[in-house]
Length: 346
Image (tube, rainbow, N blue to C red; front, side):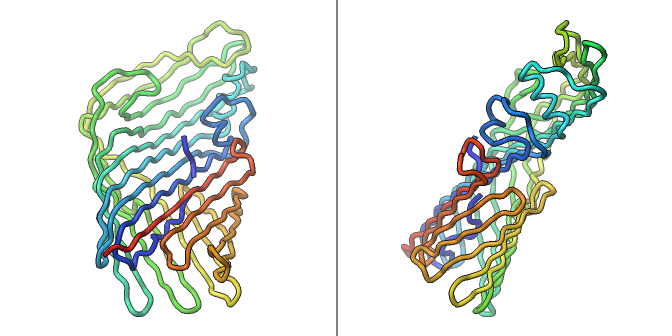
């Protein structure tokens, strides 16, 4: 799993020509990203979310219109600290925790590709607006919740949980079926102002989204643990009772919002970026030295402790951004990677 954030700002939009953009943003609160996707050998920390958003676009711009091919992969897993502790204990054959344990897993995932239509308006006052409409063909999704309570009873760890789960691949019960196909759309909006002394913008991704899945599998029911006769071990071999259905389903994706403010100064520009997703607000003050080659930018994200650097050319034809909260990739909980390229040809 590749995990990262990119400049959401389009490159050289005032130019007619070819455009290429890639953005990826990943945050793993309980464990480093590599550890979360691999074996859990270290105890999880605080946090209740792991997510990644990945975007790719290749297209052309002409007279305020853009058109091209787009891909996206979204993954969002919500949990509580008791669930991560329980999973860590089970992975490392440790004793069960004492008392009742609330368990929670909530997942939303989408893999899709399609075409994107863009329209940009710019006025002499400095205000601008851009709307992006993506028409998507989806191949993979998950959307569901597992919630309940477990508790130790002597050497036996027992409990129950309810499941409400829709999917294109069953990762819990290995249900075999013909994978469904999804089609839908997503709307993004970009509003802003650029003046002599300052600029600001607001970016709203998935302001509206709807992916229609035809005859998608839907599993509802309850888990009840069974004793594996292993002393002092977490009992996670469940019996499941419930029902499976094939139903049409409309999947909605969560809103991602970003605000950017820049104050232009003689020697450097002062910047503040805000990011809102999954109920969390992150903020990053930064400085850009526009008179130096490559227009270097350095910012620090206060919540996750991520340093971020960016370089771009004076004409706005290319941009590169890289960020991490650790000098070691294997220890990073927050990663950002982005680049954009625009080539005027018309």
